[in-house]
Amino acid sequence: MSDRNQVEEVRELLGRAVDDVPVPVGRGSESVFASVRRVRRRRRAAMTGAVAAVAAAGVLGSGALPGDGGQRSVAATPGTKGAGIEKLLPGDVGKIRKVSLQQLMTGTKPKTTKGKGPYDGDYAVTRGGATGYVSVHVFRGGKGVPVDLCAGSRTPSRKDGIEQCTTEKLPDGGLLNLWRHAPWKDAGGIMHGASLHARVVLRGGTMVTVQDSAGFLGKGSLGPVMKGYPLTREQLRALALNPELLP
Picture (cartoon, rainbow, N blue to C red):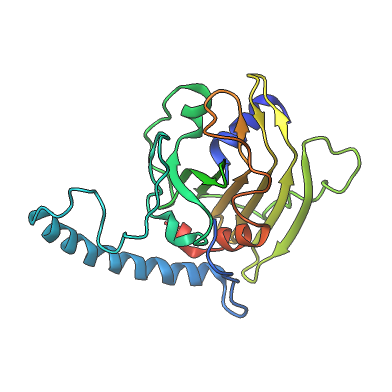
């Protein structure tokens, strides 16, 4: 894997969790996700009226919505609070702040295009004096049979850094890949810590990627690299399968 491709992977994927959310057997995950999306749309419609009323009363000076009292913040780091993703993560994950890895590492602002999913983006997670990162991205419009990224990971000749790769077939015919990426140094001198990755491809073509990185050292670093990861492998799996990540 070239340095350019690895930087792109870190910039776009760097990947939080709820209690284990297995895909129900006997009911396709696409249909489950569709049900959750319908519920979310109804909640958003109700919330719009509530927010308008509260704003008129001048109560939104802090920028927090009703029920957001559990949001965490990270002092002295750029970005905003976790943009609501905290509710999908374990309570002890650490302090969360939404950031842009592209801006941190390169100093250039990312395009303002809106992500496909409600939680798309990069999140700095600070715990125990170290900072790791979780990134979520949703892609739509894929076609064909999902490619198993682990197919060649067990061969000694593989040199792309992918390790401990596992494949799980989903009830709807989709695929879940989980793997570890070894630490590496990019062409700009930034040292990237190890990272865990999850990629879910549903039968309808929707793809969810989550990266769970121990952090990085060099330009733009917000702290030392974690000894572990922001999320455990099981927490990463649960987050990647959480239907709340979908539009």
